[in-house]
Image 1 (tube, rainbow, N blue to C red):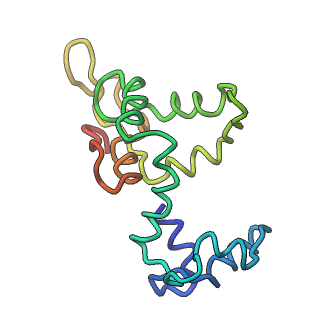
Image 2: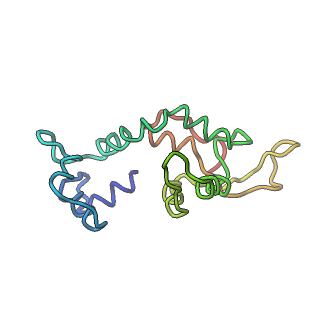
Image 3: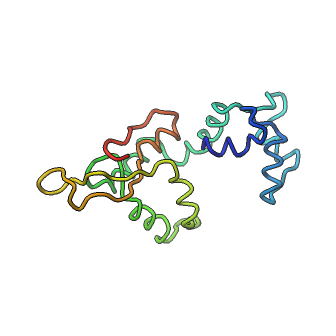
Length: 163
């Protein structure tokens, strides 16, 4: 989410203005009308957004989708070794290949990769039957604790082992 702020902040001012958002919407072929911009910059409110304000605005929209603990629990269901991370391949397959339900659309591989970016690391050791060891080791993992913390502003569980 921070990277998206940087993309929107065309002049590196550390503030997003209606002009910055309008330019990005236009570049994407989306409606950049004053009515649309008023969604992000309502009348009689500051006409710029700092990074904290931007993250708060995005988090407010994401929060109703799933409460923090529910999201952590959902990821933990895939965390066989209780390491605070899940295998990237397994998670990607679950998100891309499983059919959507309830009118939702299935995410593309590129969308999944974009969301996971910045939260993927390499597993150095893998827990085996006899404890930890290098055998059967590595692999890319998604550090879901850090991801959830990013959405809720640092209140989530941190990834335990992988980086």
